[in-house]
Image (cartoon, rainbow, N blue to C red):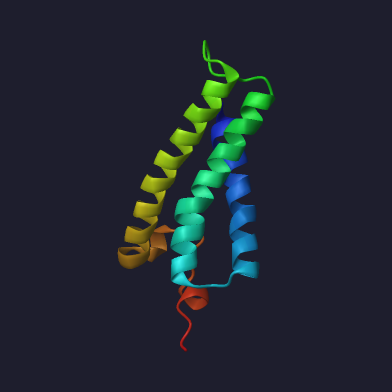
Length: 108
């Protein structure tokens, strides 16, 4: 359980964050939307898919319906995570492990 709900999504999030920083750039909006919101949705849904394919289905739920449930759960987690990420970027950026003022708040 700890692997599928902790290690795998965190590993996917680190990889996605590095890819976003490399190909999209270092902008606060990209950080909040990409890492905080959409990144959470993608990483949680992919890890739950991998979990299901590895033989950990939801009990008494058909496979098609469990995909819908996992998709909706990923969106709700992504919404909360994106909202908290935006708040922390604005008020407490030191609480975010992947935030760097030097990278994201460069003088123009």
